[in-house]
Image (cartoon, rainbow, N blue to C red; front, side, top):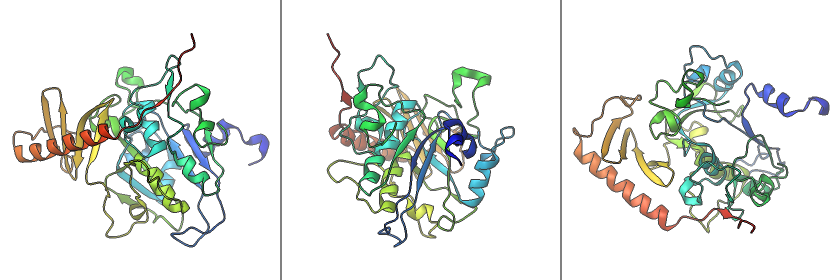
Length: 332
């Protein structure tokens, strides 16, 4: 592509979908894991995209031939989660590998806000720059508009909405999942994910192990030969064994947690998902009931008790070891 053709619109059209993106050009030193040249990393992160808003994930009307081809040449992740059902917290998780409350970003940020992603956080871009990568963020950032919080303060060299329920027929579809944006049902946080790396990620494979955006930082770190920060809690895990299609690979997450703002509303452990909102207790077997239609809480009080304890223990740990967002004092 010539320089004159390399516009943001052209770049996104070439990828087949208009989404915010992170591009990390490659580097030639050998990878500590493979002994080969280090890979390029490209993340395409879509706002509010519904689980069924991709052809290869079952859309009866939306045509996504480029994404479908990527899935055929790579791997589909069917149980991949965004760490939040709204914009800013989901991006904070992607950047830091942490659940949003751990890094203090729990609400959608607007121009009135004086907080943003704390520059003291170690982002995936910071990790890769330490290995000699050049980094760029193209498109929506939404982690603070003040200079202190912009991409260039968080490891970068430069700096279509989906299942939004209030938009009704103008929204996308999260089917067969329940509900959509702003909720901790599967339709709000479970996302279509595709990973492609010719000759390294096996083609045409499907992975149903639990994973999510919080796993991007530690996975990229491992592939780039970098260490995950050891001076703070990172919630994400290295999921390269899943991506590589190793026969015995399992999700590294003993449990996955669903936050809405600072409130922990649900947990998933294997096929079981417990959701506790106010006085309502819901238990779903996602292996048999992906649409969360059959509340089995009364049938399995032992599982409810065990998962409630898991939620309480994790939430206490997170709140004890959470970190503040970056903050700029308002000028008088």
